[in-house]
Length: 188
Image 1 (tube, rainbow, N blue to C red):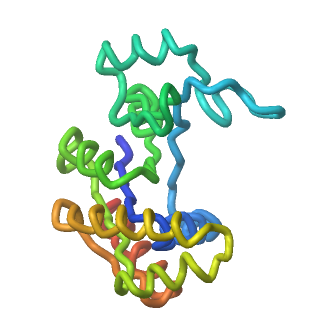
Image 2: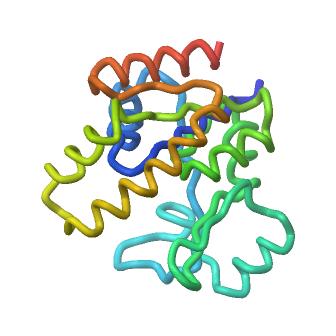
């Protein structure tokens, strides 16, 4: 039996990674992250096929040309990251569920690609003001960078209606519980 595909997307600062990590740490669900591909060189201690699939610039561009990605993004000029179709296929064919922690546009595209084999969940902040407060409380970014992130978040929130489910992260514990329940129902 094939596994299912779970897509989780959210604007930066909405708690997406925290929610995913909490569910993975509980270990109750058969979930595996897909290993992303990148054309950046490995950092010290990173291994190909473990941390990332490290591709040359030419290899990455060839994979794009061959439609080998479920999604990819040029995060910085000339620096690409993406999810290979064969990586998702490997996990689901082994009978495991794959979880994709990807940007909003990628989430919409992956859902279109896999249809009913995938469930997409959008993590929404309680409000733009609360998102700004969360980003400011981190104390890791300049006011200018926070404004850019908030502007991008407002744009990304416009995609929420294209997701199967939306979970508002007003209370982290409740958001974790709701996302976990949605995953369990979908995997039945």
